[in-house]
Length: 165
Image 1 (cartoon, rainbow, N blue to C red):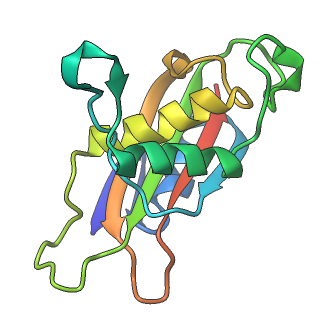
Image 2: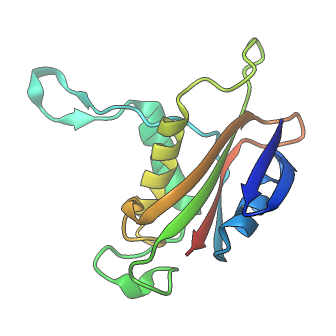
Image 3: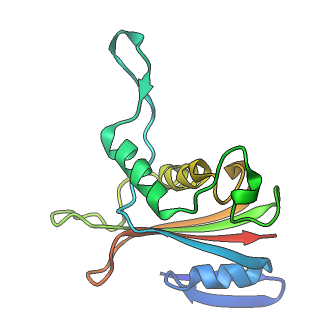
């Protein structure tokens, strides 16, 4: 898939493989942090209410993914901002997120199933919960998300590029 990105009078022609690098250049921000979650991405699920109203829970697939994702993210302490990877307490961020998803053998789909915003919510919530990168995902003022199937040579994963502006 070819995409044209335009900034002022400059047109950049990119493929889906290098669209994030071109986007970083266009934003003009300081490239700050690249994160990889080497797990097959899953979309965020809505909380379910248990029988007899004993509380809310998430489906196992999503809950397990979120728990495992924490192992691959910088860890901090909620009350201690000095443990964060980030140099400043609050700044505006641009986040480019690519979801590389394993294709089922019998699937005839050309793009992965699941809403892109739900994949994004899962990844950004995992980063927020790690307390090691940003205070909250409300700092993100611009996001570029992309989902695709993994090629035969690739492992499924989530790639995040976080840019301070």
